Image (cartoon, rainbow, N blue to C red; front, side):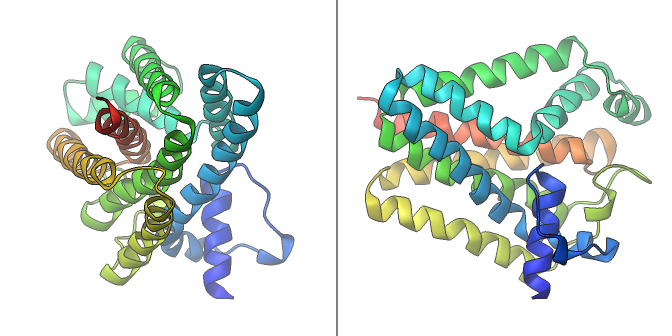
Amino acid sequence: MHQLRLFFTALQFFTRLPIPRWVGFDPAWLNQASRYFPLVGVVVAAIACGVYAVAIWFLPTPVAAVLSTAAGIYATGAFHEDGFADMCDGFGGGMTPERVLEIMKDSRIGAYGAIGTICMLGLKLTALSALPPLAAIGALLIAHPLSRLMATALIWRLDYARAEGKAKPLAQKMGNGEFLIAAITVAVPVLAVLQLRWLPLNALLYGLSAAIIATLWLARKCVRRIGGYTGDCLGAVQQVTEVTFYLCALASLHP
């Protein structure tokens, strides 16, 4: 029952989806809820895949990709896209750690954030549009939880860079066992997609390798620029590794 409460706590924190009233709330649960961040990704992936599967019956593939992406953004309240934009602004416009953190805290979006978001969404939509329908569904089912696992790795290994912030409740470092729970969550949809043959094994290997490389690169940049991570950094890692997986899946199927 406690683990179920932790999952619903994570679902409430990372999405705008309603949760049962009996769950209640305890601030201490937020410190443990990050283990279920990838499982929240499975829920978001199910929503995005459901919209895509219905839309593809009646509409062209690009339209289905747009509707699916919009459904995922609506479910999360653009939580991760906002973090990605803030990190683009902060790291693009700040010269000192203090200035970077100050810019990232500003709710207004700047040129770096706008351009980065346009490019990121453009890549996401064009990659999904170019994938065959079953491959696109398989990529969505894997990319959402996998990208959240990559973001969770920052909580597992890095220090929080602010004295306070929107990710501060999650900032307590994860134990190895907690990270293992997160990793096992990702393994379930991966095995399902491989068993159904919606994506080939090389697509998974390319996507996983590229996601790890992107995460390590972003983590190194975070440590060098601000001494750790913030909530915006988690959102940026999630978005970058999600798009990276789509691109790798597409490259693996390209003749």
